[in-house]
Each structure stands twice: as C-alpha cells, then as structure tokens.
Length: 219
Image (cartoon, rainbow, N blue to C red; front, top):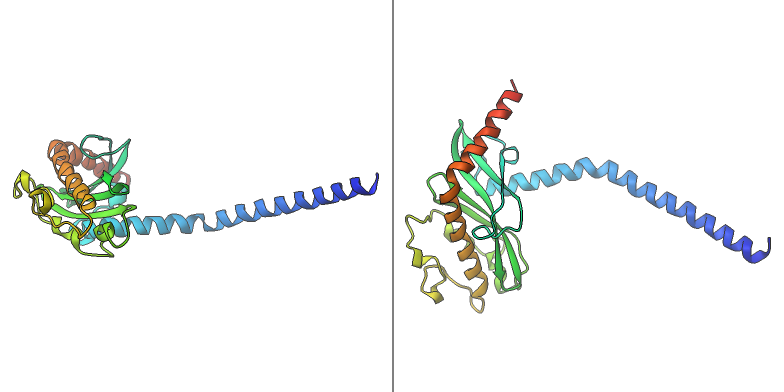
C-alpha cells in the first residue's frame, strides 16, 4: 500500500469515527431534551389559550378538549386544524378557533379567535405573521393594544357594514401607513364569527363527547 492510499484510508477512518460520534451526540442530546421540549411547547400553548379564555373561566384541559376543523371559505384553512373547546361544570363556555387571514401585506396571518357561547368575541390573538415591523406589526399585543378592540363584539351587536376599517367606512382603526394588515384581520375575524354561528352546536357537541370520554377514563 503506497503512502497516498494509506493517507486516504487514515483520513476516511477518522472521518467515519467523527461522523459516528457526531450522530451519536445529536441523538443523545435529542433523547435528553425531548421531554423538556414537549413540556415547554405545551406550556406555551396553555399560556396562549389561557390568554384568550382565562383558566378561572373554565375547568377542563383545553389542550385535551379539541375538535378538528377544516374550512377554507370562512376560516381560511388549507386542511384540518385544532379548535379548542372550553367548559365549566360541563357547560360550554367558548370555542377557540384557528383562523388564517390569507391577505396580509406580507402574506398569511395566523390567528386564534376565542368566541363565547353567546357569540361574543372573548379575544383575538395573532400567532404568526410577517407584517412589516413598525407598520403592520401593531396587530401583535407586544407592540400595541389594537387587537383588543374586538373583545365583546359579535354579529348581533355590530352591524355588518361596521366590520371594516374606518377608511372603508367601518369602525376599526387602521394604522398610519398600513391599511392592508388591519383590513385582513377584521375580515378574518368577521368570517370566523359567521363560521361559529353555523357550527356552534357541532363544536360544543363534539367537545362534550371528548369531555365525557375523558371523564370515564379517570373513573
């Protein structure tokens, strides 16, 4: 075996050992941190849901009482997503719907819309967006309180023409230099209320089935 062949073999062996060590280290790190990551994700989800329906207003586990929804025309979804149902003493309190506004300035805006049993909005929260910092990002509660103006509104107490930004003749403020983003949010929230009105009974009935099933599991 000449010197060049010996060098190639030695380097290949070293590279193989290094690769095995790296893969093993990554696998070990994944195993050791997997449960912590799962717990952190769950804690974040619980916090987000409890911002919409505070935990003192319901007595069930929201993450475990969910209904899969799939609606493009009203919720803007491209497939099945989780809706969470809140109960208190088995009485339906609210539903938290996943809603997409596809027409944001920089694309889709993902929302969670909490709607009480009586059809009033509990809260709206933006989950993900790519709106322009300093202009469209005022939809985020970390930037402004704009999103809070939906709370308490419903299809019954707000005229249909009012579901628009003021520039379009509605009652919702637009942002200076950014109308497209609030317009997209207002439209998406109104559509979600229409969806809830049409599917309210089904959402709570399906949620109640899971609630009852979990009750039997714990007895």
